[in-house]
Amino acid sequence: MRIVRYTTGDDPSYGVLQGDPGSEWIAGVSGDPLYTPVSGTGARVELGEVRLLAPVIPRSKIIGIGRNYAAHAAELGNEVPEKPLMFLVPNTAVVGPDDPVIIPPFTQHCSYEGELAVVIGRMCKDVPVDRAGDVIFGYTCANDVTARDLQGPDKQWARAKGFDTSCPLGPWIETELDTSDLRVVTRLDGEVVQDGSTRQMIHDIPSLIAYASAAFTLLPGDVILTGTPEGVGRVDHGQRVEVEIEGIGTLANPFLRRER
Ligand code: MG
Image (cartoon, rainbow, N blue to C red; front, side, top):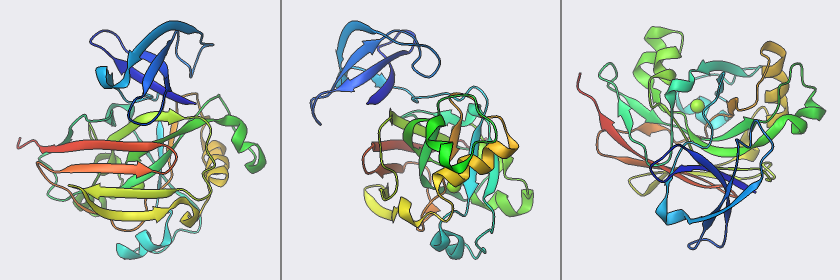
């Protein structure tokens, strides 16, 4: 099932995506599927007539995982961490499909990072690896946009990976997906720049959930970014980045630079 969050000009609504590629439509649902039981409203709207929004705005946190693909760690001259390398991103960084990513004036090297994002569906703590599937609501595409030139000098990655608009999510949440071997492709102005597979992850999704939930209580709507394959690079004003994940869809965002 694909859960969409959208607007036709009024308050955000939720729905379930229906129909074939190219002629999709949305069956409206009442409530918020992440937090409340939902039922169909009977509303039907064509996908092309709505503006899609980030399918989830995390109420508490986004947990990022750094260097979870060996080839990506190597391309930036980093060792593969023995344990997952976690960082936090504030929910104010989230934007949706086609929303502009605003490159702030304090970076001269902004990079894309296409990633599979896991959306947590229930409150949990100390989740065993073999129960991790029970706490997953679904999956979406993410771009873990990074001010690469701040990661070293700042030491903490809060600013480099947490500035406003630095975490596009979408286009929807796919609730049923085998994530063991999904192609993750990133395009910069239409040219493929990243082409990896989730099977290349060093720490798999159950391990990441177990590791993260040992430190933090996870809440419904929390998001875990699972790391990026090799091929990261610079993106600048006027360019467009697409993150396509097999079985989910494509998240696309234009990039604009704010001078001051
Ligand atoms: Mg990343």
